[in-house]
Figure 1 (cartoon, one colour):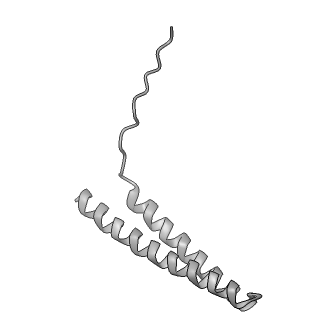
Figure 2 (figure 1 turned 90 degrees about the vertical axis):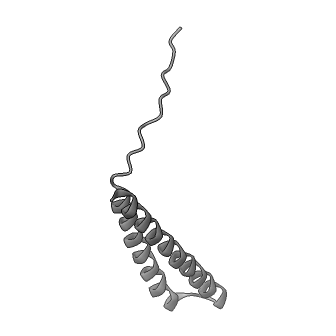
Figure 3 (figure 1 turned 45 degrees about the vertical axis):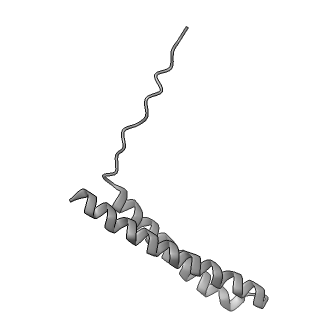
Length: 76
């Protein structure tokens, strides 16, 4: 009988800061695109949905930045 060696991959966090920075960049681009789409929103409800989503994106960016600080501190 063949036995699987299910060993977890080592925890490689060396590029976490770069990944988080990329995530921030992508989120900002998505926010900007959403802001541009506000001009074409069909209804007030759609505008509110876009604005609410951008608020959640701002919160995510704050979390990403906090994680970057933690990662930078841990790598020192």
